[in-house]
Image (cartoon, rainbow, N blue to C red; front, side):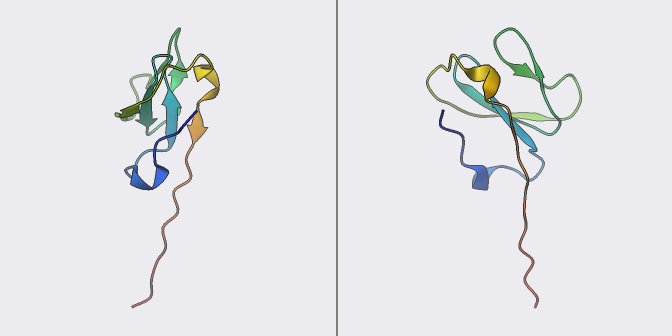
Length: 74
């Protein structure tokens, strides 16, 4: 399972998950699982990230993202 580049995600994405067809999505809130993928439960935002080969193990693809920002003193 190859995940999207985490460094290129918008700051509001806190979760990523892959559907059975190989599509990766980013979510602002934890998504819910449906029969062949994930959905945002009508709360928060979502964004299609990319598509890779279909994944029969997609239910285990849900990943929580922790964003870190480096602050530079000026």
